[in-house]
Image 1 (spheres, rainbow, N blue to C red):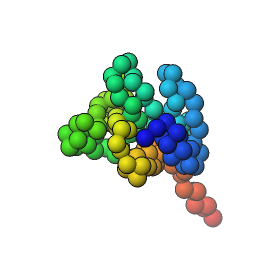
Image 2: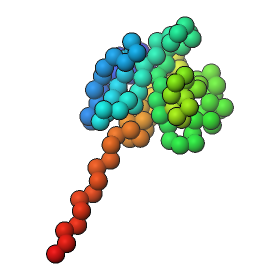
Image 3: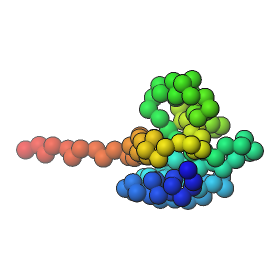
Image 4: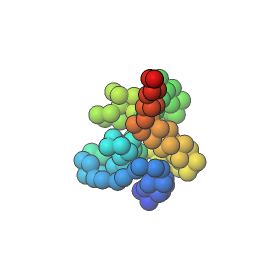
Length: 116
């Protein structure tokens, strides 16, 4: 799994843009980050993505597969997970990226009913 795969999956989602943030490729939707690419962040030895997961899911993912999922610095306290890319299936990565995009994408408010 490479940055090119992460980039392709992220940029296929509507309203997504890529910018450098903290020296790494980072993917935004509606002005908010939904995926951060981390290439050996501060020498941790991991090539990974960091992304939000649904509320309450983080502890179970990490406990269930601590070699794959980890508590990333800075954003882990907000329920994000780090996912090591080596050996990860593209379908699994696409699922996590799609879910992160849904969690972060601004919701449109329904139109107000006209009074009359």
